[in-house]
Amino acid sequence: MRELTVELGERSYPIYIGEGLLDQAGELFVKQGIGKKSPMLIVTDERVAERHLAKLAAVLQEAGYQVTSAVVPSGESSKSLSVFESLMTKALQAGLDRKSTVVALGGGVVGDLAGFVAASYMRGVKFVQVPTTILAHDSSVGGKVAVNHPLAKNIIGAFHQPELVLYDLNTLQTLPPREVSAGLSEVVKHGLIWDAEFVQWCDDHAERLLALDPESLGYALYKGCGVKAAVVSRDEKENDLRMILNLGHTIGHALEAVAGYNELLHGEAISIGMVGSARLAVKLGAPEQVLTVTKRVLTRVGLPVRLPEHLDTDRIMEAMSHDKKFLEGTMVFIVPTAIGHVEINKSVSTALVREIVEQLKQEAVQA
View 1 (cartoon, rainbow, N blue to C red):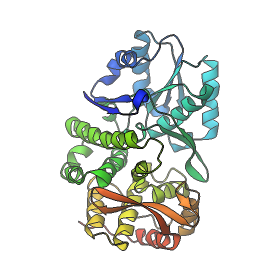
View 2: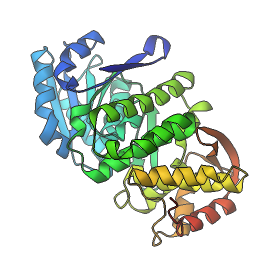
View 3: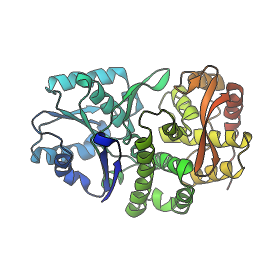
View 4: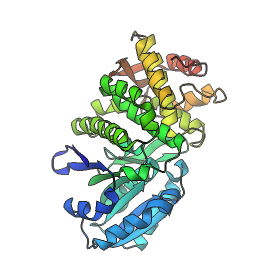
């Protein structure tokens, strides 16, 4: 088992990564001070419930916890105010109180949704992340929780840190190939913003990662979570440094909104967005290598690097205008200046962004 810590003073919490950790959930919850006297609500989705809910619930009940569960539809559409309201109703019916804990068992959608429930219920109760996708190694760490609005992704939310993150690698073995690739998007992102050697490692180990080799996957998630933990420890509320974690997200979130949160998976949209950021970087003076390496590594792990031509540029630009990073006619972009290093550019013109979006429709893969 690998262990990391998100350093936030009295609110610091551990990230556990390893095989078979669901079996240890009871003792790890107790170790972290999760109380047993108040009811606990596990939130999961339909697909994850079939595979892992019974086991986690049984382990926690055997440890003495009072467990209730709520199952939501799988997919991004569950990150909505209507599903949020249904979970608040479930929490009330289950008798959750101020000392209760909400457990998110699932991918990023479940984590964001359950976390927002935990942040809002009685103005905030404890929260545990039990991610079951590769993509969730990013969203499960750092305490950003939210639901979507039809006009903008993650626009309704809060900062609410978990008590711990429990990452059982065994839960990843049943992921379909497309979701594996989508999850690796955020893994590669952490290298692109922070660690050039890790980017090369991802390139060299792409086949093993796609095959879900436990040792390679465990190392990759440890490195990715380590970058996220380091950044969040220095800037919890995204005042400055934490913004670098948004590499590729300005364009990516807009693509998700325009495509209706179903045509493109989050990681696929962010992959296209990272290529857009790399192309923008080259236009602003970065070496061409930034673009070629970004495209090569993302392609190696099975991700798209061009924008579907049928997505309307005007609608994409409109979606970006609702993004939290849109400021008075200019956009905040995380721009790579080299592989493993990025800068925050707060004055990228909308005209230049439109040009980049159009170029992404013709983007060619370079070996």
